[in-house]
Image 1 (cartoon, rainbow, N blue to C red):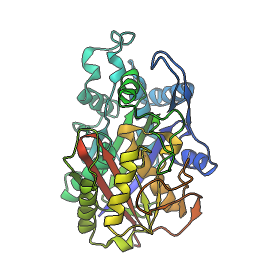
Image 2: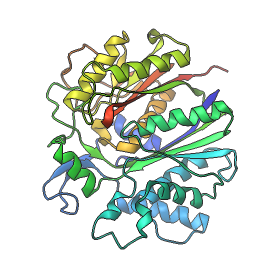
Image 3: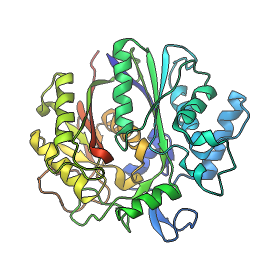
Image 4: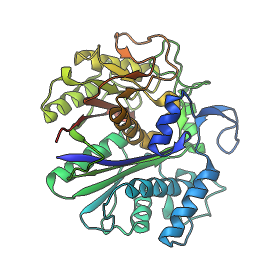
Length: 385
């Protein structure tokens, strides 16, 4: 059995899961107009982390660990996130029985920019090196496992952690992930014409693209329960729909298969799902695809939300921070409204949550999709011991 033991979110709305969740309950959104020529020559919408608070938090962490050296913004975000999550457990991060998995799509991609190119060694931009930085900071004896599979990376990392624990490879796994808003990322999404000129509106009839966000998140899983947590991983899977490099299957084949395999592993039927945390990017094809997948699994009546209207699309962090929010929803029996949503804009009559609601949550589904036809799903449930 795999237990969710601790979690953390570093975002534009807070430096902790409860702080970020409270801001969402109050209807706050971290997505703001950004005008900074270092990122893009025109105004764009994004959710950015407060750098002053990040530096303050990081200085506190680095002083406790008595570390010296230079760290990138993303490295600081990840270290602060892991430290906060660890502080709420009794897990020994220096144990050979504790693994680390890193989820990211671009890592320290900003180091390729001219103004940053001489700030660090050339290998610092490599994803394995980012994992190595985290491993060395916390004196973990194991090589950090890096998962970079587009925007399903976070959910895939959690699924992988559960597999390692179930196989007996580790007793505990620290899953951490993050990505930053950078010139490379903004330019890339602009080239697809996929960024909305306003804060994104998942599943809404008038949605016109996604909003970018930067964040870091950490979820710690383990083989033993603790008094504070009673939520377990019960199933997860991934599937590729082999449709197009940037467009999802028009029949939702990959997402349908990922959910189907997750249900099989969990040993449950779709009618036992109480709530669904969708990927919900607010792009026309993604939202439509997810509605088709849910319809094919007879999930039209189950409450669905997306949190991207609060924090934007945080890429490699998305699956982790969205799972952390889902865990908080389950702990508080509260379903957050889908920020930006007003009128259904997909072909299937899925049950999008438009107002924050109290509801007993026992078993929930997390969905994720990404470029290259990648899809992932995960089922989590409360455990009555």
